[in-house]
Image 1 (cartoon, rainbow, N blue to C red):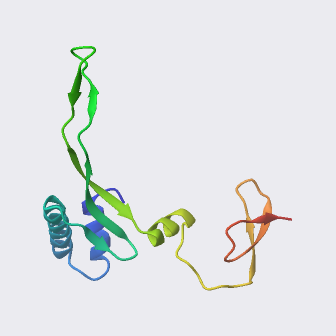
Image 2 (cartoon, rainbow, N blue to C red):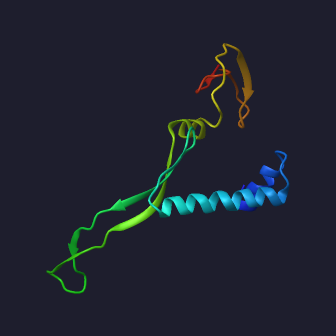
Length: 126
C-alpha cells in the first residue's frame, strides 16, 4: 500500500463505497492535522499517538561570525509515537496467537527443512 488512494480502496473492500472511503480518509487526516496544530495529542489505543514535539532554543556558534554565539529559535514539529503493541506486531510480523505446542515443518528458501513451534519466535534446524 503506497498512499491514501490505496488505503481508501482497502477500506472500500470492508463494505464502504469508494467515495465514502476517500471522504473518511480526508476527514481523518484533516482532524488529526487540526488537533496536532492546536498542540493537542491524538491517541489511538494499540496503535499510537500523534503529538507536537518542541526543541528549546539553544546557544550555538555563529557560522558567519566565528567566535560569536547566537540563539536558535524554538523548533516545533509533529511526531508519531507508536504504541508498544503496534511495535511488537510490526517487529514480529503477525498479531499474537494462542499458545500452541504444534510443530510445523517449513522449507526455507535454500531447501533446508526446519521444524518450529507454531508460536515460537525462532526456528530450529534438525
